[in-house]
Image (tube, rainbow, N blue to C red):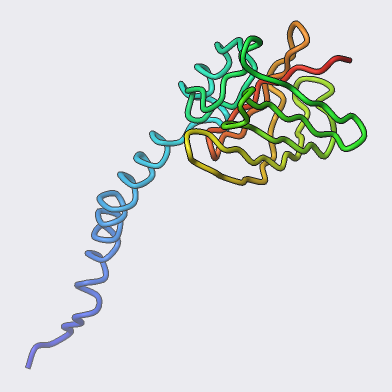
Length: 156
């Protein structure tokens, strides 16, 4: 018989370093990966490309889905209903926007019910958009999660 042999005492000293080793090997890389992928809300190349656009319209993933052209488009604004509609003269393509409130200043958040038909594609969205910029009568509104932007102009 082995005298004064306590198995738990012998293994107790090995548990703490093993736990730390497992934590470092498993948790630390996961934390590093998450922080490397994280960026501040609203920042990124898609948003920056959107802000470089000058022509009113609907922008999806930094490219125009609908670009308002004075020669071939119409714009309808209803101040009471807070709606804007861009459409081509032949009405093949359009963008309807219904605002909770008109964009008033940079940093505002505005609810927008958006529906559009472009290139035989129809879609509806309810978005909360941030007013990123107001310049020369135009307003740039952006929703980061859907990478959707609106450039609008109001006669106010």
